[in-house]
Structure formats: structure tokens, C-alpha cells
Image 1 (cartoon, rainbow, N blue to C red):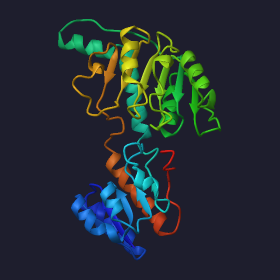
Image 2 (image 1 turned 90 degrees about the vertical axis):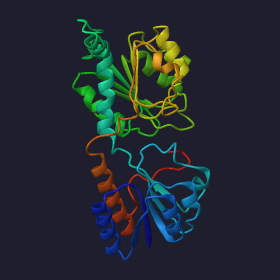
Image 3 (image 1 turned 90 degrees about the horizontal axis):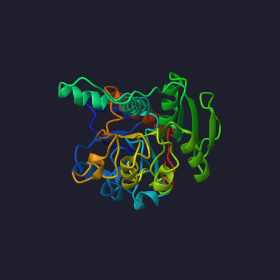
Image 4 (image 1 turned 180 degrees about the horizontal axis):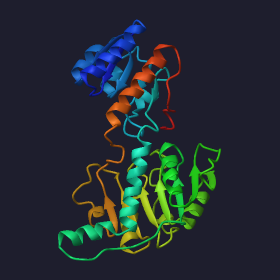
Length: 317
């Protein structure tokens, strides 16, 4: 069996992956560009890392892909979805802890007026912004996968009541007060009752512009909206309009529908909005965690076991 790696691992890490492959009589190749990947593609059964359409098309023996991403919306293309013999696994949950920390950083910056204080500091002006206490308020989670669970864990420290909706999970964790199916009616109920709403769902056909004008109108004028998962879940013109009208208190986005965000986007000038450049999943531990997960899943596959985190390609998660 031949294995193709298209990910910027170190030489030492590639050597370790080769050792795993060799234990099961397999050969591993590392491609740093698409031209090299295309040379090895015809004989490869496994791709670890990036899997561009041209490489997949040149790999008739391909049976398993291990993606480096949690969200699959930007990676699944029709030809690979239709190949039923090829399974794809993602790294769901791997970036959840740092993602939740980033969501809370955005929320705390909004609720405590940190951005206004920072602007005042640079102007040598004594003064701050809002001073909203989160303790005892209600957090609404749209999605209760890895990101949602980690967000909920942090909300416990603020003694928040946690409401959640989810398309798949049916068993309510103890730290959540309510868990309901992800229907439109339940979404609007969650939006009306929450002081903070955090998006923790994948981007799919069903969740594209899930939060738009009608949905934002359900939120409290004092509520905050946070999204660190995928751009496109929130209708950005609708969000700008809601912020300009004071319909909600503020929003924090780490992701946008187009990235990098175009210079002419109205998001740049929207009031009470904090933007960060898709960094929620980053941490000093990420390179190590990706490598360790790839190594573990590769060994599972080579032993004949089902890899972890196999996605439903047609659902997109």
C-alpha cells in the first residue's frame, strides 16, 4: 500500500509516519507540491492532508483521506463526494478548546468594553466602554459538537444557564440545561431567551445564512452574537443592518463569508463588531496535535480498523 502525505510536517514527523507505515508493509511519500503529489497519486490508497481535485482524480486506488480541517465545506467537491469507495475523516474536536477560548475572548472584549478602552489608551484618554456582567445570564449554543461543548464548559464558570440546539445530538449533557432539535422554531426560541448566542455548527446547505434578518430580530437588544466556526452561517448584510440599528448589543466574528475580508466590506465599519482573521483554531499546540491525530488514525486504518471522525460526505460533516 502507498500513502501520500500533503501537509507541512517536519522531517522528524514524516520519519515517524514512515515508521508506522513500514510496520504494516506500506510505503509513505511526502509531497510538498501538487506536481510531486500527481506522480505518486496513481498508486496511493491513502492521502493525509490536502486532497486537491486533480490529485484525487489521478488516484484510482484511493480509499481513505484524512483531512487537516474540521469544517469540510471548502474541501468537498462533487467528484470526491460521488466516489462511494473513498471515505474522508476530519479533525473534529481537535481545535475545539482553543476555538472556545477565542469565542470567549471576543465575548469578554465586547461585554467589558475592552476595544474602546484600547482605543482610548492609544489616544491617552482615560475612559472605557460597556460594563456588562455575564454571570448568571443565558448562553444559547447553535450546535453542540466539540466547539459547543467546550464553549459550554467555559460558561459554567460564569454560572450561566446553557441552552442548545443540535441537528444530530439527542442526549443532553449535564452541563446543558436544555437541548432541542435544530428546528427553526427551536432556533428562534433560543435566540429570544439568550443573552449570548454562540454559533457552533458546521457550514452546510442547511446552515448557510442560518442567522439572517428574521432571526436577528428575535434576539434581545442587549444580546451578543459570536461566530468562530465558519463564515456564511450568518448573513453579513443582515448583521450589519442589525448592528447599525442597535437591534443587538454587539457581535464578534473570527470567520467571514469571503476570506480575506474584502476592503469594501461593510463589516469593517459596523458598530460594536470585533473582527479577527480566522485564528480561533490556532494555538502553539496545533502542529503537534495534528501530527499525533494523523499518526493515530493512520495506524488504525493500517490495522484494518475504521478511522476516527469519518464524515458523511453528502451531509458535509
